[in-house]
Image (cartoon, rainbow, N blue to C red; front, side):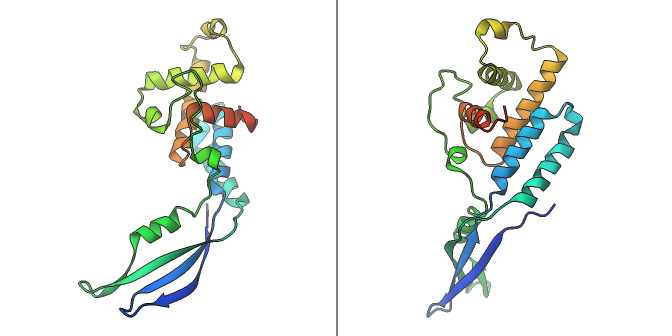
Length: 202
């Protein structure tokens, strides 16, 4: 799989000490957004956990093939001469700034809305999910099921968490949420659920 990033170097300036500043144009790719949608959609629809690896790889291949690039953004990058090692070194902070813009991220995915969903699990952020026990993650996924299905507490009581089919579905959902956060998304569980519902993925 090839996922490439469009960028180019424009102007170069040299100061009196012989240090360089180059302006790098970055064309942000929407690869991450596409990969996230493809991966979560496929993970939810996959009948067997054994197939997830293949499904995820296919989702990333599709995202790489269909990615588009946004308007260019210019970043100054300093290349400084280090007297101790007698060689030029690229400023790490400048390169980090460039790298952070290789892939675009819609604001609704990168910033939590701050909305209170009236449920502790739906209000969870990335750090809450990552710190949670497996049991709590299962409870969180059950709350997602309730929200997506519009189910009452009584209707939820009919669902048996020990049922193998339910357990498999929960594992897939946990995988989808983890993939979301691993891909740099920083929204709450409730934000994530509503976003996926709006995209017709849940």
